[in-house]
Length: 220
Image 1 (cartoon, one colour):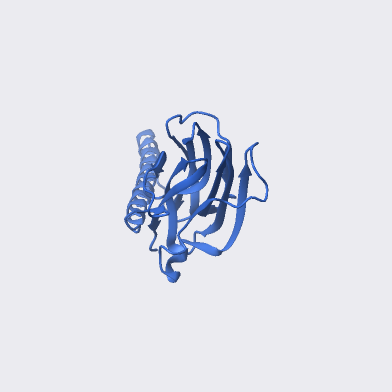
Image 2 (cartoon, rainbow, N blue to C red):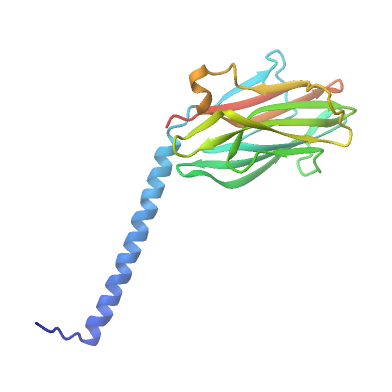
């Protein structure tokens, strides 16, 4: 057997080489992740905003999320006959599932306390929103939540649960005044691909008169 004797300089070179390999591996991994995220972002459709009902278009609160981010929760407050505060809770859609969290506040009084806030269970996204206003308050909020499946990059639309929130002025058992849902916005075969990525609302004459939703389709 041949024996190789390493000098001190040789040993330092080997250590530096090993460090370089580690750094190179990290750099390649980060590069692949960036490339993957960039190509992933390209699979989203352009945003589509829809008012419900269509005859109402004015909004008192309105906000939209950056690409890859989807709504997982909402909160509201009304005062003086207007929706003054809206909170959007969001998570990022990634190849491995929903990741991270983002909070966005908007309205004429964005930092005021909320009257209602509802959030979907971890791993789920909002697929419909129903609201009610009474006595100058947002009294009822209901979210329809469906699970996101990372393997297919789709929403399990038909497996869902409702999450509700009530203010101190709520009337239990009262019907919701208005609801945004994308059931009629896309074809039946696209239900699992559509995500809520923006929202807005208007209060008028002691009732919810208009809600707006922005949706994007994700094509895996």
